[in-house]
Each structure stands twice: as structure tokens, then as C-alpha cells.
Image (tube, rainbow, N blue to C red):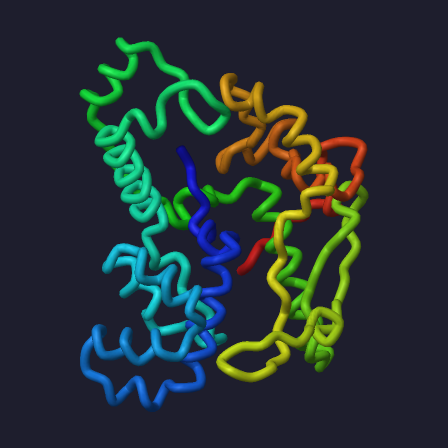
Length: 277
């Protein structure tokens, strides 16, 4: 089972708890520095968050509680990648299974909120063992070696950034679109990407996080195919070493689908060799 590292941020109660913790830690940073132990900091913070959030935090494993009190990043956000969400879920499932095995009559039987099992299945369930082995992938799980498209795209971004710098243009982000027909260089003003967020106890101008759009063409395509992709080998990546041939010019499917391109072939203009003396 694969679990996204930011899962806890999308649980409503946890989202509220994290928001309140961020607020208290930001507004009381100097007072917290005077406290020597995690226990003292925890007691200080619990007295300054809502009753519901305090109750929720009390139900979490000690290790997880301590993780929620870690130093924030430069924007005042919790460092989600440092919190072992997978271990929390494993512990919660283990606790639930222990409860079900200790009191099977409360969970097994007839009814909408019960599990229907035969006596033999109940016996096997009670005698079963729940063994787990977790691993945190981090960037290893969501990136790979660059393809020819990655190399061509980032190379052209570098040329565009250099052109902006030489022209004395600041406050822009370099971008390229029309990837299926030669590419179009863009310089996007930063001000158009900035909005107001409450961070570190005050309102700040930041670039908003981009979430997966559930109504995007790429996500709809994923919904249509995910059952087949879960059981079949449907890999479409050209890989990092496909530097020539038709497959090497393949666009990422997500980009092609969301931009409405008619094919997966990218075209960033004429290729030229750069020879230095």
C-alpha cells in the first residue's frame, strides 16, 4: 500500500490541530525557547489550543505528538516529510485489530456496521497475526532520472532565465508552453502568482500550493484506467537513456492530457550542437 506523506494534512481534525499548533508555536516562539524539555513544551502548547484539538493530540502516540512539535520551516509550516505517517496508520490499525480480537462479538455478526464471518473465519481472524514493514520513499518514490524531454525543457528554461537576467528583468518566473509546436518562451510576473496566507502568526504574501485538480483531463484519464493499471504493466515512460528514436521525443502524459495536445511528441525547435574550443 502506498500512502502520500501529506495525508495527515487532509484529515479535517488533524488539519485544524496542525493549524492551531502552527499559530501557537509562531506566536510563542521566544517563550518556547525557555522551556528545556518536550514535556514542558507540550504542556505549554496544550493549554493554548482548543479543547477538541487537545483531546485529539492526547490520543496520538507519544512519538507522533513529539513530531508535531518539531521546528517549522522558514514559512512556518510543519515539516510533513519528517512525520512518519505510515507508522501512525500501522499503530492505529494494530490497535483496532487488537480491540476486534479481544471483543469479536462487538464487530462480527449481522448488520450494516458489522463484518459477516463464519465461525471458522472468526477463529482464523482471532488467531491471526498482523505483521508490517514500512519504508519511507521520499523523493525516491516520486521522481526518476531525467528523460530527453526533461533535459531539453530545463535546458531551454536556463536559456530563458539567462536572457531575462541579461536584459535586467527581475520579478519574473521563466516558463515554456506550446511544447508540441516548437515551444513558446514566457516570462510570468511573480505578482500574478502571489496571494495572502496566514503563516507564523501573521498574514504573508506567498505562492499558493498547487493541489491535484480532480476535474482535470489527466485525473479523469487516471480514473478511467486505474483498475487496469493496478494489475497490468502499462508503463509509458521512455526512461532516462532514450536519447534518440521516436520514443525519446515523448512528452509526459500528464502534460499532454492537461494541455490538450493531440500527440505525446514534444517539439522544442531545431536541435543544434554546441561546440566549444
